[in-house]
Amino acid sequence: MSSDADPTRPEFWNPRYSSGRTPWDAGGVPAALIRYLNTHPGGGTTVLIPGCGSGYEIEAFAHAGYRVTAIDFSATVIARVRARLTPEQAEHVIEGDFFSYDFVQAPFDLVYERTFLCALPAEAWPAVVKRTSALLKPGGIVAGFYYLGDKDDGPPFGLCEVESARLFAPGFVTVTDEPIPPAESVPIFTGRERWQERRKSRVRIATTL
Image 1 (tube, rainbow, N blue to C red):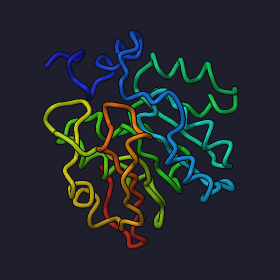
Image 2: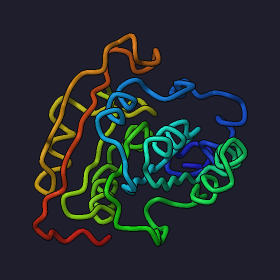
Image 3: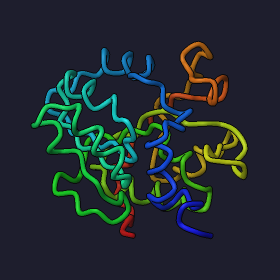
Image 4: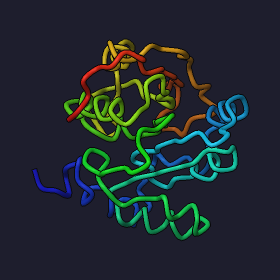
């Protein structure tokens, strides 16, 4: 497979961002995240946003009192995001690989999921969960949006109903699992999104990749 046909490579994503072929891009902060931030103010809490894309949520987290780190391996979108942010916010937006980057801010209190898992084929999902766990503090939270759909016809690559719970077992406990109202989704995700929150076990589990 050539790199420009492989969604695990930046060469796949750069031309899509350059040409505006981004049907997953909601153009703003999702309503479910706004509700979450209204009830979970940061107060210095650290959050990591992997595969941040257009990164609208960066400002939302920052305004809610979180210390935000975001990463994406698409140079095209990272340049666009940094240009929109304040210099202080842009300093913590990283062009790099989530799986190998050495995050000096780790471990984090929260990892936010939005179109990162579903951007990657199913065979990459266990590595995403393992790396997420390694980057979270014991008792930390992974929260965000999970897409239910066909895992073989993507991106987006969809989970089945029970797959996200199975992926995160046994190192996480589900705290919240609720559907996203269709009116709050972009068409490509309508009726197939869930907001899920999971807490990392405080018992030490081997997570090093």
